Amino acid sequence: MGQALYRKYRSKSLGEIVGQGHITDILSRAIAQDKIAHAYLLTGPRGVGKTSIARILAHEINQLPYTDDSQHLDIIEIDAASNNGVEDVRDLREKARIAPVSARRKIYIIDEVHMLSKPAFNALLKTLEEPPEHIVFILATTDADKLPATIISRVQRYTFRPITIADAVAHLRTIAEQESISIDDAALELIAYHGDGSFRDSISLLDQLSSLSVDDSVITRPLVEQMLGLAELDTITGLLEAYQQGNIAEIVRLIDLAEQHGASAAMISDQLIRHIRHTITEHPVFLPLVDALLEVCRSPRPHIKLLVVLAGRASESTIYPQAKLSENKQPTSQAPHAKNPEPVVASTAPSPPQQPTKPAKKPTPSPSPSLFEWGALLDYTRKHSISLHSILSACTGVLTGSTLTIYAGKKFQKNLLDSAKHRPSLVSALASLGYDDLTIETIPSPKPPADSQVASIVAMMGGGEEVDVKES
Image (cartoon, rainbow, N blue to C red; front, side, top):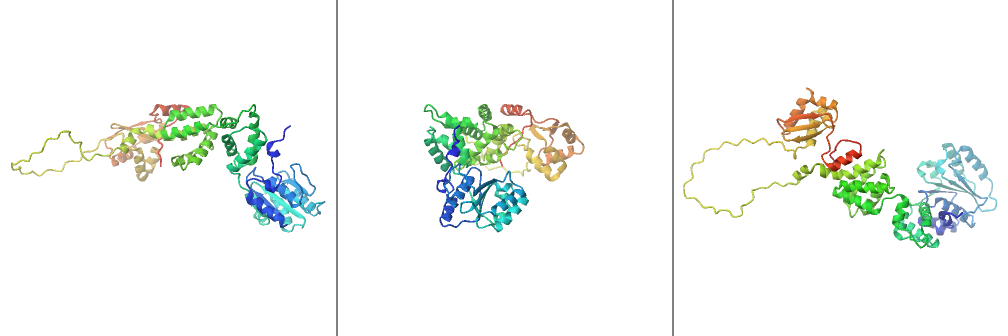
């Protein structure tokens, strides 16, 4: 059975550690000057080398050679996840009093130390406060926030950083060359990217892919995307373009294509967020989209949520095209000039005396569907009739000619609007906004989609109500 690559290429000395120079430099100098602390705390994300450095540090403190299979009576490793009781720590305290067998110091490595119980921490605290001269504790954890402040104050703390993509790619390239794995740089970068700052995870991904490099075939980015269940890069960029153009049909097609290739809605959302993050300086228009995409993974139906998020911009431009045109239309100050205007001839006859004119009566503007704003009615009722506002908030209104059709969504809300209590308030509110003598018709159902593309989405979602999505 072959050895896993992440174990085969595990560092053997502090000088071989990659990406944690801010820690290894200090520790190397301290060992060279024989300034050994009685307790160290190594914290940081998983897979960045905490346990490896703990083992290397223990061997270099005792001036012992280190290999992956090194075992020494005076270097004891304890897994706090399975030895987290107070009795386990009391047993450790008793054994710690015994002098080392052959090494300079007896060293205890406690991995995942945050898993210790509160009584166990209290028992360990006494030993950390007054440790024997020959004892060194090396504590490692991915969750330092769970450690008591009394423990943290008695150790030297070293915080590990996630591995940068550049460091990960360089290290993966070295391993690939030594293992004769043919892989291009784009594929290595994608592996490093999905390693999430962990050398162990990145090397494990490379190990999985190594079997594809046979007969001089090269591992490419599409192969990595397929293995990881990712949508292709062209699909991700195509979705962003379709979102910006308001092309619902293309959005639906690309999502279906990605899901057919095994990419989940959550994975597509994550890829979109990552792509936007790395191109945000060139395309800041996508920044509001990131906030909406973060909700996809938390949704009970992520595939529907993703569709709604991406189709939101398209719905705004297709459902209300008349309103948009009216907003962009500029008023003209004068009528267009004729091509051949007749010359104006001055008259020499005396002008007749001018009669006083009565001020013209201002005509009442007729309602226009393109200018009717349901939001204005909601704002007015919010200030003047809270009970009516609460009913209208769940409804949708459409003005056609002199008829206002209100889609109440439910029969109960229709009955409320038709009641003697709320109908007069509704008529009064409309009159205050300049809409007199309207015929009001209430429908006990949601407003049907006005666009065929939107209708197809509603059908996919199992029915629903058309919503006006506006950018803030």
